[in-house]
Image 1 (cartoon, rainbow over the protein chains, first blue to last red):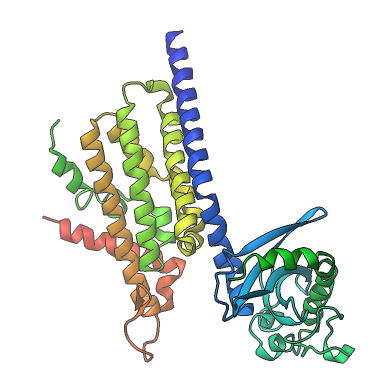
Image 2 (cartoon, rainbow over the protein chains, first blue to last red; image 1 turned 120 degrees about the vertical axis):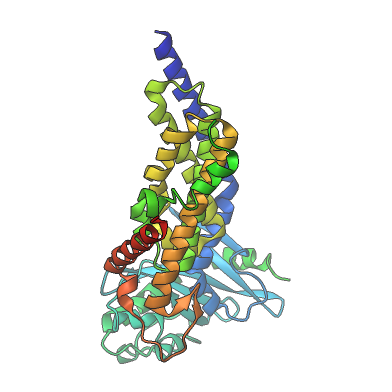
Length: 198
Length: 197
C-alpha cells in the first residue's frame, strides 16, 4: 500500500511540476516564436513588398477583427508616413489553396506588389514561377485595389505567367476578393496604421 | 565510486563515444548529419537534455520508486525536450525547421534514457553531470565529424563556406541516405582500427 501511494505521489508531483515549468517557458517564448514564424514564413514576401521602409514591419503590425476572422496588417513607414500596409489574402490555384501577400498604398489605393506565402503548392516550373517571375510580379504594381485585378487577356493589367494561366488567375482573384474586406475595413486600417508613423 | 569525475567525463569522448562505440542514437545521427551546422545544433540540443535529465534523475533517485522509474524518466526527459523545442523556435527558427521531427524525437533517444537508467539513477549528482556532459559532447563531436565529412564531399562546403571553388563536382551520394550509412560504417571502422591494441 505504501508503495502504491508513493508511486502515485511521485508521478503526480513530477507531472505537475513538468506542466507548470512548460507553461512558464511557453508563455515566456510565445511572443518571440510568433515573431520568428512571421519573419521566416511570411517575412520574405512582406520584406519584398515593403522594400525600403524605415521600420520593422514584423513589429509594427496590428490585427482587425472582421466578423469571424482576424486579419493581420503589416505597416511600412516611408518618409515618416505610415501609409503602406501589407496583408494576406487567399485564393484557389492549380494545386489547391494559395496564400498571397498584397501591399497597398493607403493614400492612392494602388497596389505595391504581391508575394507568395503559405499554403502554396503550384507546379514547379509553371505555377510556382509566381514566386519569382519578375514580369508577372511587377505588373501588379500601380494597379488599383478598387477595380477588379485581371490578367491581360481578360482585359486587365497583369502579365500572366505563360503555361500557368490558372495560377495567374487565382492570384488575381485572391487580390480582387481582398478588396471587399479592404474597402470595408479601410477606415480602421488607416486609423491603426497612422499610430506607427514616426 | 570507482572512477573520478574527470574519468566519467572523458569516457564519453573516446572509449564510450555514443554513435561510434556504443552505436546508440543512430536515427538522428544518420538523419541530421547532412551538414556541419545541423549536426552541431542537434548535438547541443541533446547535450542540454542529457545533462538536465541526468541532474534531475540523480537528485530524485532516492524518491523515485524503482517500479515506476521509467515513466518518471520519460516525464523528466520530455519536459526538457519541449523546453529545447520552444527555445529553438524562439531563437534559432531556421535550425528548428531543418531539424524538424528529430527534436521531439530526443524523448525516445536511447542515449538519454540509457544514461538515466544506467548511470544517473545509481550515481551522485557530480558524477551524473560529468557523465551527461561527456556523453553529450562526445555525441556532438561525432555528429559534427560526420556532418563535416558529408557536407565537404557532398556539397563542397563546410558550415556553408565554399571550399573548392566552382570547378568542384559535388559527390551528392554523400548527402543522401545511403551515404549516411556508408559514412557511419567507415567511421566505425576507423574507430575500431584506432582503438585496436
